[in-house]
Length: 370
Image 1: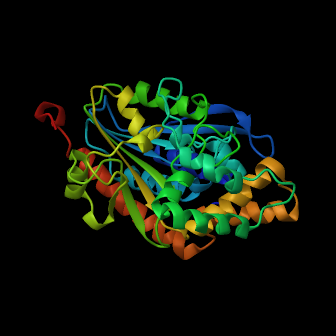
Image 2: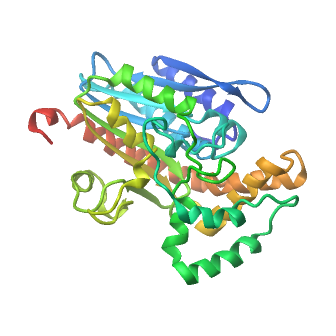
Image 3: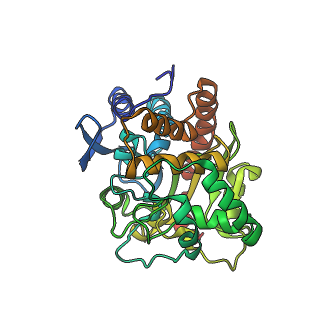
């Protein structure tokens, strides 16, 4: 399917995904969620399993975990479907595509889901004790202020500069984006229960891939890195098994470890869907990464997310002010730029092709103990 332009809505993304599967002869299962879209339409996580026979190795590709990031991820999945249509998978290899993991966020142009939850901090929420983030307690009052009027960028930037001088840039970055479980109206909230979409993903993967020996999950995201670049985020430190494995398959300069030393805590892993899937694939050598496509600066991202969050909780989404904030936030995650879309699609194609080759070549890992 030729990408003339990037789809602007969840409905169009879903229609293209299902049409691509139908044209290729691949079945799709729709897993509806309770929440509805802006026009009252039903929303669903769509799952397509590609491959013949019981799989021994599997590639899992997720789009839309952060809803507003899902449009280019959907296009990448459609592109992969079109290529698999003419290049059948070897016996024992499966590709599981999970489209629009956060369909509500895609439909409403929000990063969060219908409960204001960041799904990548929500895995197995009832059973896993979340990490504390005392820094967020300090930044929340000016990051997500409860004010009658939209807060100005200066009210955040001025206070942030003081904290950067006192605590350092790394501290405030971790405080803001490290995830938090204390403020349901805040940013990066991990929730107080496992959300419906998270449970759907766990159920589908367990049912379809429960017996595989090797699995690799690529979670498609946008927003990290400079415009036009891509980064493969690893949740393991340099020198780890995953770091070494990635370096043998992908360009080393594209790999970024989110844990920077072997002794570091892995609090950021808590809630990550791709990482959490290892729990329901106990017989599998499971690995996961996040593919990030660069868009705008971190400062612009935080300011836009802050304004959109205020509109969602305190403002009027239908007002001129509200519409402008929602659109500005969307542009931070999905730029309205055909050149960016085509370049990002090319990056995604290269990464997913490499990922698939790594899975095809993974036969015998369980026997080798790797």
